[in-house]
Image (cartoon, rainbow, N blue to C red; front, side, top):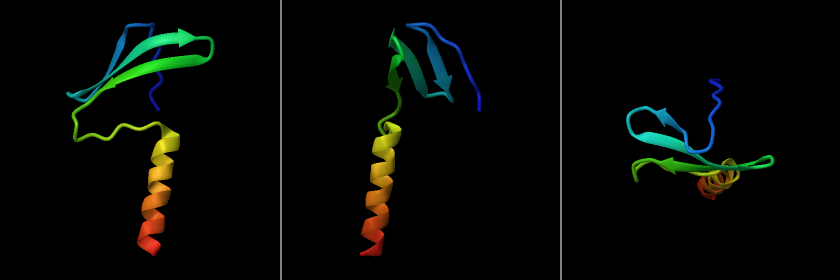
Length: 61
């Protein structure tokens, strides 16, 4: 795992077409902005896990 330190406003680039910007920090809460092509799905982990569970349950039916 790569661990990076950034301050508000700074970017992290992933490949040629994905950028993550630190928008704000409020206590232990950090807001990010993600720029990615429309073909790339971007989800919070809890949403991604819910989507995965739903897809698995639909395959079982």
